[in-house]
Image 1 (cartoon, rainbow, N blue to C red):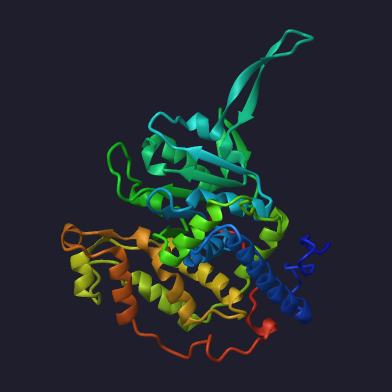
Image 2 (image 1 turned 90 degrees about the vertical axis):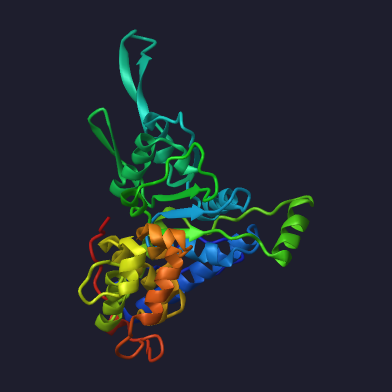
Length: 375
């Protein structure tokens, strides 16, 4: 397989999918991933001012092969972030502006009648909708009706679209970033828990601080706004996704992630009584999958071949916050899902050594064979 394409200012990147027995190849692949991530992060930073945590969490979901729900008030750069990603990744980009009158066919596409100019015969031809792009911005998803929401969420889960009895497979990598405004409630249809669970991460977009706002104003009120250069293509992204899944997590670190998830379940005999008071619905198994998958990406970004406790902790908020349903009592006293997760992190004991502290790069010992992709 040829080397990955890179702009002239960057060194050529090594292959990211290598045989486990190729020790030097594995080391080069892991360093190549870090090069890919750092270059992409820097390129996005040329366009997006600040929002470092938002960008890092979004890129983590991308390399973990999952979708992101961005929550923030209008005007914080969510659309610009997605457009910049599309430019840097060389992926076809589409934006769907959700409104109450958006129909499922507006998202998935429809079959239209066309007439052959020579024979005069009429036939049906499928016209694909915006969901067939590889990078999709679902803007204000909570303004669409549940029927239209489900059309998008089905494509996210199955990576395919069924129309008129025919199943159309979506081109991979396929990455959806949906946005919602947490303030406005009039004319919205909040996503139910089962649909929120389809998003790998929920990323909260904060306001810019004083320094960032000054930089934003200087950059956007002058001439020549920067744009991102193409760094990667779809094939390179898939290689990086496969490499991230081959990072191993020690049993005691994985057990810590599992205990965090179990800690959100109310009514357990050995559970926290505070959780019983605050939580109505706990995290599903998808939450545990999200924790481990994203932690592998974070470990690789940090230059490690093994997941540490801090990788689990760093990704716990975006991976779990949208999978917890609070009780009325928790809502009344202002306890957020982030507060609940932080409480669990503080009270859940960690057993065994942290591989992040005592890590020695031994790729043949810690890399696991590729696993089949689970939706």
